[in-house]
Each structure stands twice: as C-alpha cells, then as structure tokens.
Length: 327
Image (cartoon, rainbow, N blue to C red; front, side):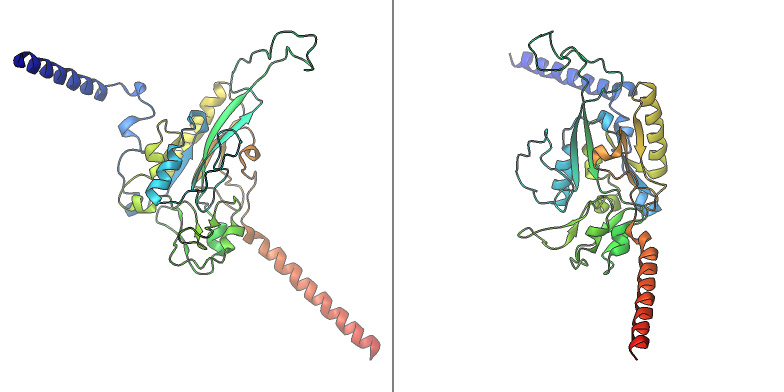
C-alpha cells in the first residue's frame, strides 16, 4: 500500500516536473509580452549607467485590474484615498493626487473600437420613443493607467524654491519629502495636475507627493512596482528611446488593424519637450484628461515681466504728467 502511494507520489512529481519543463519551453508567442525576457521582469543597471528610462502605457491591452495601483500603494506605503463609491463606471480613484500615484481610468465612449461590428439596439417597436431604434450602437471601454509624466522640462522642478524636487540619473523627477516645505508652488506649476499636498490627518501632511518612479527600487536594479506586476504588459518599463520606437511600432500596428484614431501622446513639440511616461491613446487626449498642448508656466515669465515693466513705465509717466499739470 505504501509502495503504491510512493509510486503515485513519484508519478505526480514526474508529471509536475514535466509540466514545469513544458512551461519553461513554451514558445514566445504563447506568452504575454516577452515573458521572463521582458524589461519589466529582469534586473537592470540604468541608474548606475545613467540611462534615461520611461514608461510606455498601452490601454489597448489593459484589462483594468488595478494591480498597478495596489502595487504602488503597497511598495511606497501610500495611504488610502478614501473608500467612496463614485458611480463613475468602476473608477473610484478619480484622479492622481498626493495619495494616488497610479490611477486606472475607466473611459466609456459611444464609439466603435477598431473594426468592431456593432449590434442593433433592439427589435423594431413603433411605440418606442427612440428616434431610430434600429440604428447601430457602438461602444468601447478603454482602461488607461495614468501616472506622473516625469516631464523633460518639469514645471514643478522649476518652481520649487527649496531644491526639494530634483532630476535623477535616469531622467525622472523626484520629490524629496524631507526637504519639501509644503509651499505648493509645484502644485500650480504642473501642467498635468499630478502633484498635490497631502492633507491632514495623514502622515507627512502638508508635503507634496507624487510618483517617485520607484527610484529606490531602480537604485537596486529592480523594476518599478507598477510595471513589475502588470499582467498584460500594458505598462512597459525600459530605455526611453527603445520605448518610443516600440510605441511608434504599436501605433502603426493598431492603425493597420482598424484603430484609425490610435496615436502616441508625447508632447515633444511644446515647452514640456516630451515626457518620460507617455501613452498610446485612442481618440483625443482631452477624453483622458490630458491637455493637447501642455506648457511649462515659466514660458510666460518673459511676457509677464514685459507687461509689468510697461505698466510701471506708463504709471510713472502718468504720475509725472499729473504733477506737471498741478504744479
């Protein structure tokens, strides 16, 4: 009896071992993304080598699982942002903020998704109040994991008076909480509305917080937590130039498959000069809460100072004329 049990156990072990071997020998096309060879899984030395890195986020393969949100909060010990039911699809996070460094957006649109074949709204009903009950009813549900853009020219960095916000070796923008004085200049200077101050009674209240690009993990050769756990590789981490090439290739692939409104959101032509966390989007950027042409506020300094000087000179002339008239 015991011998039979051992033989059964041995057979099970052989089957399990064979199963493991088969999984290891699976062809690459059977895996999601690049499997264990993906830049999301292997260790790196980007910080040591001073290599610019980034995130490429592709909503066409996002399943809205929010694993990135959870991983970000767990690794960075980010406090909860409330447990309020918004009623806006399944999006209860709402937007990025001091306690939300990753936000999975749920976008519902009455538009066809690629070559989607839409169905009729219902059977003909002469009593129906619908103007055309037989018309097509296109619908698409897009999930996009939003994050700090880590701008090439960052408005928050330029506005910070204490040097709390710095540029790292990999090109990301990092807020040093122990140096931040909570002035809030960075909050109003961010063209994307990403950074915010943490309110009372949360830990470190008053300070400004946003995505750190998991700089602590990167220094140890690890991938940012959100990209590490993404099951479909909707979020891809890697060298910035490689990701931009990958993004352009993906847009071309989707457009050939019927997604005619697919485009990259990476505003290199504005004063932001490009972002390190860029996106593939379907449709207009405004639908995702992204400004079509974001600008760093400091570009308006020249015109502001010019206006101030002209106003001061004009005021001086008026005062002199008044004194001359009454003297």
